[in-house]
Length: 510
Image (tube, rainbow, N blue to C red; front, top):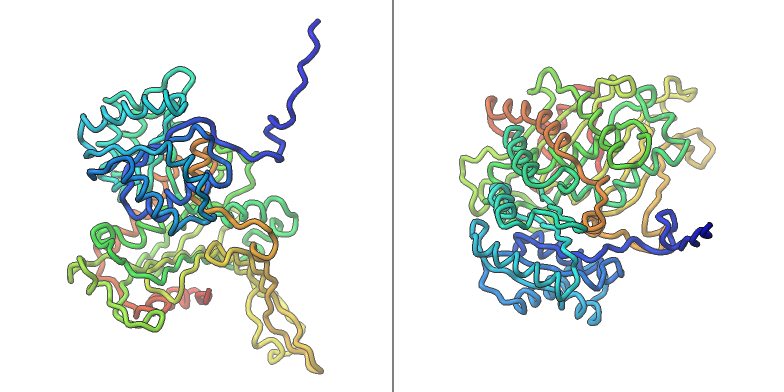
């Protein structure tokens, strides 16, 4: 009888002494000339390489309508990396990475361009050792998805070779309503199997968002109070201090609700409200999120519990800024929302009677994303009314960005001879507690794609359920009136404050 072979502990998936490193592969970036590629994707790829998480046999192929040679693409990538990368620039890392960079010029509907792409990838398999493993990143407007997907099919690039894989990464927005999302899902699913489709929501790649699950399920002190017996309401805010910039062509007609609430904020809501999964596998996490989406109930009166608005001229960062309708490329008659606030309820035993307030907007007070779980006031306070007049509600605030961490707000006695109770905070900050900085969300997500690990990627059911929630609100806005207005640099329109006042609540100042 043959003796059992000794097992290498460093190959054990449970062993954390070695990081997860992607295997040989090539990543094709469609839309490589866009802002997303330049500011996020290319720096994230370099940061992964700099951290030793990409193999020597990694290749990067850019695809765009530019008359560039490979060297031109490499120079553009280097400039973007030097400006936006999180980790220091190292020549040895760059030389290794740039040696596997190629560029294919052509339009998305060109058979010749895709034939050239197939040739380039075949050549990389041979000289770079990518082994036929190819990922296609669609960082392009959604209108081009069907064209590119079809060309990948007809050119044979979507077909798996034995012992290799093909994956496609789809950047948001995934459709502009339920019907368009269903059509896009149908197009993608006809070419790529469900396990090979990765729909990007970069918020799910953020450390603080993943930590939300750790805080809830790795501790015993939070989960017992994570329900309607103790929680009064939940506020989820994503605020930006910038305007639309040069994105008028994209943003007009899309708006804040479609751009942010449909994906980012509804995903944050699902992670906040979900039940504990059986395991942290992709399947189980997705099932629990889908349960939340199926239980969401819209307000009966959408006029009272939803608000949309546009920013007007004002002051931001000590400088005068233009209003939305004055931005270049925006028609004066545009009704596109730059601010959106909605109330949602979850019809479940855990959350019945607890409203979830979601808001997002541009040109607000400052850039911040946070989840605030606001608890009920104590049913009885054995103090004089004057002792607690400055005491607010307890709250647990998950700061998603930019100041990553968690704050717990509670009441404490003020030092002195009098009994006076005020709010104080207990703060956890990533920068103070850990020696390593949080990776960019795209670093985690790109690595997960190359490893074939999907827990942080929503599947098509989640996308469609999100549109089913948002579509009635968007339809209501189209049929009823015009957007409200708010001055740039403030925290939104008065109508949003009134929306919460009707419920006896107020927005937190982040």
